[in-house]
Length: 115
Image (cartoon, rainbow, N blue to C red; front, side):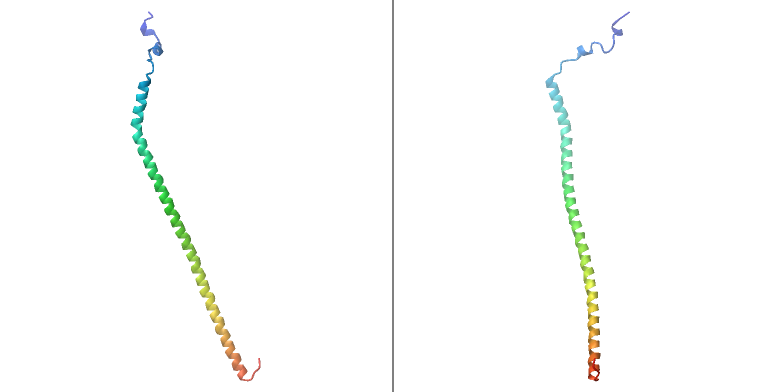
């Protein structure tokens, strides 16, 4: 026979749903918020700390980079100095040669040979 057990399980469910209690929804929402809020606040402060650390790290990196740039310019200056020393010694050699030539020519002049 067709008894209550033969009825489809979905039948009558809609009628059984109670009216949504707004107060209950509000309380549930508050409960959820109070449950997750501390974790979210902790995450927020952790993110803020991370951001601050990143800023500090970036500033430190910039300082280190500028130090390296200074080192490079010092290397350039050293190269310039060594080049200057090299040319200075060349100049000294030329001056010595000129003095020697001058002595030779004056000796020749003394000997009576006109140049």
